[in-house]
Amino acid sequence: FDLRISMKRSFDLFFSVLLLLFFAIPMILVFICIRLTSKGPALNWSDRVSKDNKIFKMPKFRSMLIDTPHVPTRHLNNPNSHLTPIGGFLRRSSLDELPQLFSVLKGDLSLVGPRPVLSCEEDLISLRIKKGVNKLTPGITGWAQVNGRDELSISDKVTLDLEYLNRQSIWFDLKILFLTFNNVVRGAGISH
Image (cartoon, rainbow, N blue to C red):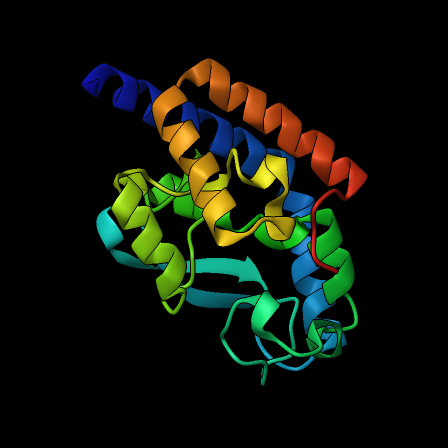
């Protein structure tokens, strides 16, 4: 089991460095575009729940206006009214997620694992604890992400997270990364 964890960490480090190099110029351009089109910082930091329910600060490119409440998007009455001028594009393209590659380098995230939830999402957190999913390092993408993402109920997300816990392997991670790329290109399962 320790060898699998060590291999996964090496996999995460190698591919996150490659992706950061590949996306360096697009990230700089996104940073500049956010600063030019809306007030506030280019990055948004939110408290997220990591492995064993530890809280960490997760960065994303800011796609929402600075006065937007820090709640899951599904809890906003009209999410589109809170988007910055380029926020919809950032979310559809998943470019807002790129700063999380630095969290992978730091060890707060993995490339693949259950999505880290906001610390206020108590229903999802408690269900993950009950099913043992909280033992996993959360990921930028995951099995639930490629099987419905924002369209899934909380119980369906945790069922898929549990399936990932039981099926973990480098090959399964590669499959999920491939499916993630495919979904991002198609814009599948993303709240607009």
